[in-house]
Image (cartoon, rainbow, N blue to C red; front, side, top):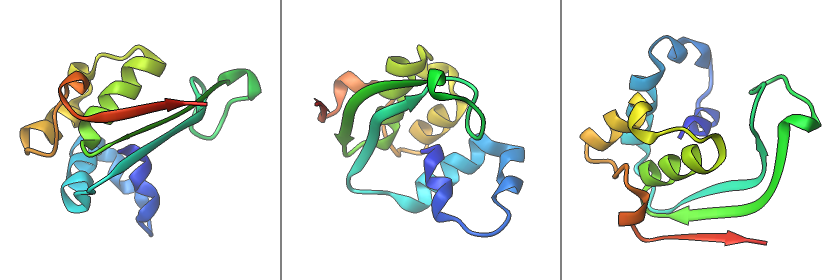
Length: 113
């Protein structure tokens, strides 16, 4: 969901002051019918503008589903070992009815090359 910042123009850095609320607001405005998470190459540290090739894992994975909250929860756990319940923007999005934190309870597809 953070990558959706790319659709916005202007001074996006102002949204970082309240990033969790901003991400939930953006998800509320977007309401996609299908979400794809490109996890072919995953930057696991020193992002978003720093890093080196040693900071990238080659996972060759595409995660697809109709619940962007669940997809973010899945990749947060799978690639960074983050507990979705600790990510406030996901909790806010779930509370707004934008999806569920529990990836196992939604219909999704994970494809690995």
